[in-house]
Length: 77
Image (cartoon, rainbow, N blue to C red; front, top):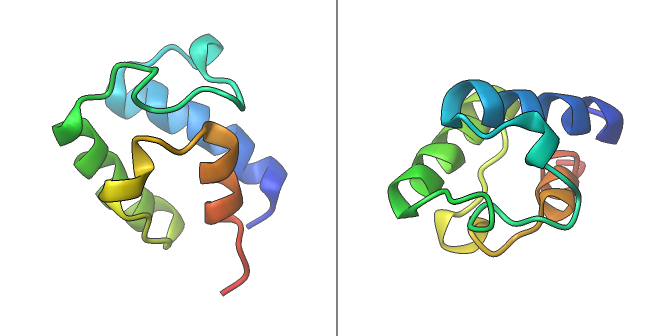
């Protein structure tokens, strides 16, 4: 998956599954900044694995910026 595709899909995913308006999603914001609580972070981690085929540990995901998440999703396997 390319960086551009992940950048397009991530705000849509946050909007549809976690009710985070896409206009609030920017490269520098973290999921905690977007008010995702610990349960939502675990759910996001599982959803990311399901949607993108990439596991992002829930212990790290809350402090990662959107840009770091996109980079993680587009890392070569």
